[in-house]
Image 1 (cartoon, rainbow, N blue to C red):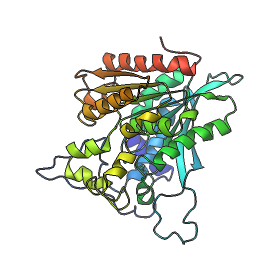
Image 2: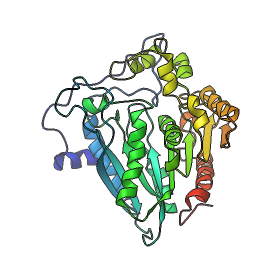
Image 3: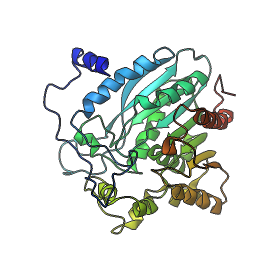
Length: 349
């Protein structure tokens, strides 16, 4: 990391002007323990833009040997919250950044599959912690797009406060896939999958519920599924993040229907896409009860899907994203589920 920071300094990546005022998560109290890492943004020290640009370099260091790595900008829906709707440009489409990965050995003379990857975290971003998963997917022949949707960190306070939880952020991700199809003629619009863990699992689910025609298959790992239930077991600090004026703006007590609207479990009747769900009974972040509620809702609607509830799998919330044999076995289950629908050139056995 020290070497990369020196590279960043040398390349002029560090801002010449002071960073934007820090955006801090609500402080924990003695009766409200710190919220889990996936659920609540870590305090913004003002260096998040620098860290993001350094991580941009890391993607190349980690994956340039097997992939063409790029970062693109495209437009999505306008901001959900506009302070002065009459101001010049107030209704302009929001600019979103996304990473693109194309396998270097890909046969572009024929149609190929695409995976739309949804990053984890309410206020987070796509970072190189996922690089090992991306490598496994690239080796199979998947092209990948991973958007830093509105509310992601690394782009300053203004973009951070553009968050539109379970709503326009979903369209940001959907439109990243459409951008790929528009710009790479070898990608097959009938072989597009969507995948994500935690909050990314929520965005995965909301994508297939709102844009079912766009996806051939989906995987949701430890997905946030029920915001109403979630507010019941999370800390006051976590709850206050959602009721912030730039966020949902009201507590679940004040507007339960708004929290339902943004929760996958209340859209179960919309499922049309082949879906695999994984959860873990010792998940310290997304309590298994949320995912069980989703599973029961899908069953009640008579939907066909696959799921697995892991019993106390080591790693908790990250159980199948770490480097253990059990985690790798679980990821192989995911890849075996995706392959018949997406037909990559080199599927894992």
